[in-house]
Amino acid sequence: MSDVVLDASALLAMLKGERGATKVANAIAGARISAVNYAEVVSHFIFAGMPENEVDAMLDQLPITIVPADLAVSKIAGRLRAITATAGLSLGDRYCLALAHRDNLPAWTCDKNWNLIASEAGVKVVQLR
Figure 1 (spheres, rainbow, N blue to C red):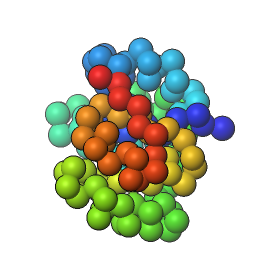
Figure 2 (tube, one colour):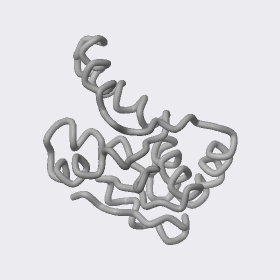
Figure 3 (tube, one colour):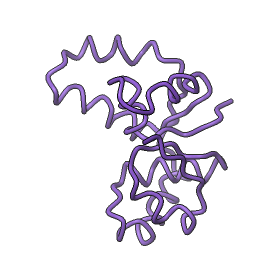
Figure 4 (cartoon, helix red, strand yellow):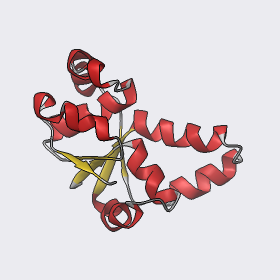
């Protein structure tokens, strides 16, 4: 099963060859991402003008586990708002943290604000940049 939970920013860093890309590439086969964060990645490339078929071709071949936004993870994500609001984290951020919390896995991100709430959220956060 998966060893890490990726935030959209972590997967985007790998796909765009940004700092932290190698680390994510080395862990991708043992990684998971919430369906919400996966949607963020899709929307990033669509908004940038990449054709849908190219986005699908790029993402469909990745050996990553896409985890549905089920009731349990949704409840955790919703409850995290009180903890994460002061750090400016989004709903997508909370889904990543919620999945990592539920599965007791580290959450990988490029968002430094996560360090402000990691302890209170009960999640190990790994910064890629």
